[in-house]
Amino acid sequence: MQITSPFFSFLFFFFWQLNILVDTGSSNFAVAGVPDPDVTSYFNPELSSTYRSQGIEVTVKYSQGSWTGVLGTDVITMPKGLYGSYTINIATILESENFFLPGVKWHGILGLAYDALAKPSSSVETFFDSLVKQAKIPNIFSLQMCGAGLPVSGSGTNGGSLVLGGIEPSLYTGDIWYTPIKEEWYYQVEILKLEVGGQNLQLDCREYNADKAIVDSGTTLLRLPEKVFSAVVQAIARTSLIQEFSSEFWTGTQLACWDRSEKPWSLFPKLSIYLRDENSSRSFRISILPQLYIQPILVIGDNLQCYRFGISSSTNALVIGATVMEGFYVIFDRAQRRVGFAVSPCAEADGAPVSEIEGPFTTADVASNCVSSVSFHEPVLWIASYALMSLCGIILLVLIVLLLIPPRCQHRYTDNDVVNDESSLVRHRWK
Image (cartoon, rainbow, N blue to C red; front, side):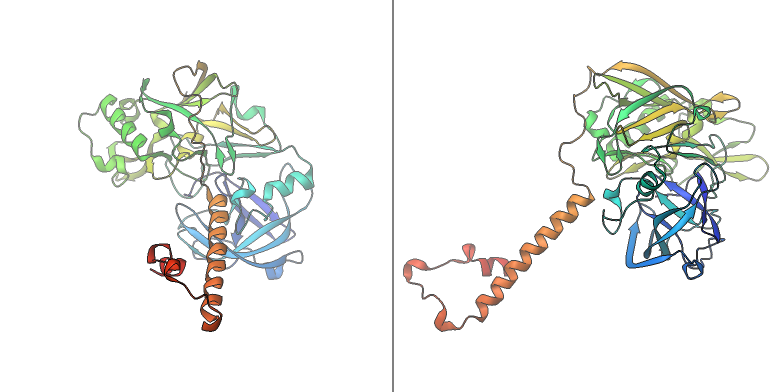
């Protein structure tokens, strides 16, 4: 998880109003529970008449930062839209590392992914599941992230809109295109291909989904599997109008600066991502212009504007983060197990749109399934770990019993019964 917008406000019955970061890549609702030098406000559960501690410690780790807190329940209201009070699970953050950063305007995080990702287990009902049950709203929410072409900062001031329970027509233009959710943990989707400047990267489509492709508002950049990232960088460098460019810019360790009167975006190509349509024989593409991935971040003196590369490499996923999501109104239709994309009217720079959606296209040139059939995500790993631990425990118990059996009760092996080292359970386990 990296810092991004939008955030919105909750009113904790009757005391605190806190700004909360919206994250579709995690599933816990958590707020600062003790003073922190990097947050302006925090929630003190001792002063809430409706807070109930569950006494369960929880730790959540993100790709950037982590926190540890205690689970409880409390009653909240929201300033706009849904009127009434609702009892939800909430973690009070007591310790954190690289989670709250200098200058942030938010005081907690709202995880809107599925309960499979909830910590410490999927039995913790998520915020949105609680809201669907108690407020009886449709099982759908939508998100508009704004700030295209604006200076990047960790303050979350670029804003946006979160619609719980439906779709707001004023937040998009044109049609909504839907792609199926492949698995309900993250919002996992299926990427069919990528194009840079209209040129297909010509990679096996499984490379784009290694080992998953997700839509995550809590990730700042567009993150690509290493092989895909390398191909994208080479294609951008080849098609851009810049002959020589620092490799450190592509890896995110160096900024590129131009005179403030210049607009460097004209030097770079368009980037397109093809998603499988609900009709599996069709696809559609979402495209972002350079204004979304060549991001202004720093002004030096009176003359220089410096930019960062809004794409990075990843070891385990393709992540459609804020770099792409800022161009679109994104609908998380959990009821029909699909994610929708429509062009956002706030995705403009200098009065011109910086995002596009086009389709349909045929999928005859790609595999019928670009997602691996074996998915070793966290809940499966937990189950496997517990099973192995149980097996080891049983084996250890048997060994202890065998070692404690008096010699007179042990079987006397004949020459034909000799067990060698390779087949001996005891010797093999303890080598």
